[in-house]
Length: 529
Figure: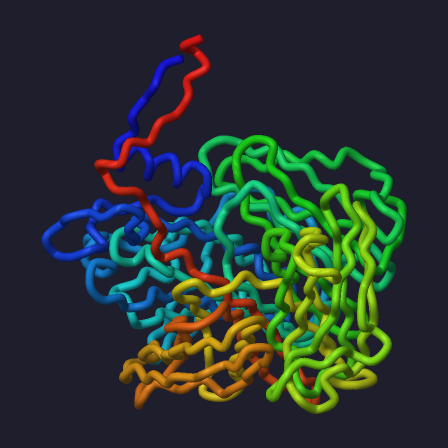
């Protein structure tokens, strides 16, 4: 067999190929002298994000906010100048009717105002770059009222790449999907899980598939209900053309109607960004974010204090059943929801339980851990559907199982009012620093430090920038202690409806661990047999 020694550049290339998300810089994380140490951290050099088609409603408006945190030391110096912007995707995005279509009373107005009051064009579909960043630490915001705004494909490189975040927030005034639909634009990947989707009557759930590359991607869509795999009524394989987006209505993939479904999106060739847009006739709609990767213990942070209904959906993708403890972490500790001490999830099947108004007026976060200890752990994916309000004034949002923050995580598009930050420490006590960036119209960043006790959830109004107008970003930095998970809720009530959206805040992957350039990495080459 041949024995090949990889250089640092080769190792970095291999890492980038595995993630499909970021490329490493050549800067040193260990000091200005450029000396490298084993298993050092380096800032990523390029990030890719994909924003789905926001809406086809004539009575909707969409705000886009882009932001890269300001970083110090080697993380700031390693990437060079760089740039960040998005471009409209090409392809078949206008031949499928999405949530909110057919509503009357809207005007097709192009553009909006940024934090300085300047009129700007957003998502024009004519090749014009959208949201070009001028400097890290200051967000850029733009709006569109267009009902034909396209999906967006973008990259950030150099100093703009580490932690680059884009938020898409759409307000639909009436019709199917009425409410706020918010999503953090996603990095391309080859595997996604969406527990909490539906093919039931009264729901319209579309999965939006966006291909950032120059070759077509072949994607498989599989649906799993409470009795296992839903029988497909059509070919579940989808071809996504290069630099294009394709929306697929989930109820067209099967004749079976199921209220609680787990969708798996896998790419056989190429990579895609995937997001599920859900619209309910009675409770409005929102984007369903992908769950964190399957894990034995999961955290779902940020259940609002006034939630009138909370529904938990869990799927066990492996060959073993999962037995889970269900806990609600609140301000002073964790409790077991009455009547829902545990949950049994059969392999290859979706399980769902209705937790009602589980928070009882106090915000919290849901924690799932294996019963019987780690020795009986079975990885699962999970999501929550949260409803606020009653009767005709209901609105819903989704909370995914959210990966922990190793270093930093950011939520863009925070307003002067309406933002709530939730932090949960499932194990040991954690200490974090929360920073409000400068606003899109100027101002000064403001930081505040919080201690989250183990087994509790802390819900706060994040700090706001000193002076300045416009939207701003909130960054959570883990300083010490145990694992911490976070989410951000943006509430924008309108006409008596408690419109809101919730975004999980996983680690932004702004830096990655790489080996020493002098370390001997050996791979086996089968061709040398």
